[in-house]
Structures are given as structure tokens and as C-alpha cells.
Length: 101
Image 1: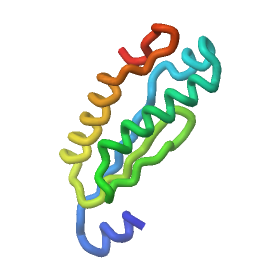
Image 2: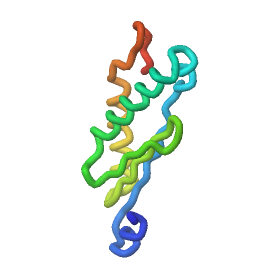
Image 3: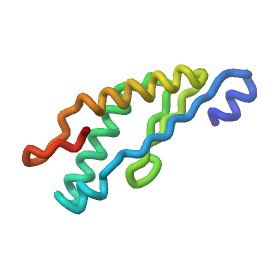
Image 4: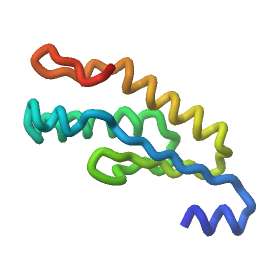
């Protein structure tokens, strides 16, 4: 729908893809329930950085995507960097082991 809207109105459209590192290691070390918790928390962090018009989604097992309507690549890069910084400064840990490096 956003692609069609972009073509019809001549507006910008960007798309962010993100892959979360080391989820398999978390699953293998702490179990899938902890890995799922980490993924849910990362998803929340990404969603908090998005505008209401953005469409964040889990794309695959450990991949996330954000459709960014009415935004050129520079704006999407800025949003992706804000998401990365939010995840970096988070305190995702279990038994004293941090998941963010």
C-alpha cells in the first residue's frame, strides 16, 4: 500500500532491515523463552523510536523491518541509528550476562 501511495503522490519511501546478532547463542545458552524475551524487548525499543506513520515489524526469526513512508534514505538512516543506539544502551541481561555489546 505504501509503495502504491508513494508512486501516486510522488513521495519518498524508505525501508530499514535489521538483523539481531547472537540470538542463537542466547537460545542455546539460556533457552528459547529468554531468546524470545530478548526479541520482544528489542522490538519494543525499535517501535519506541518510530513515528506513528512508520510501520515496524518482525520480519523473520531475528530480523526486523521498518517501512518509513515520506522519508528519504537520510531520514531512514537516522532512524536506524537511533534504534541501534537505543538497543546499545539497553540493559538486556540474564544472570549477569549482557546480551548487548
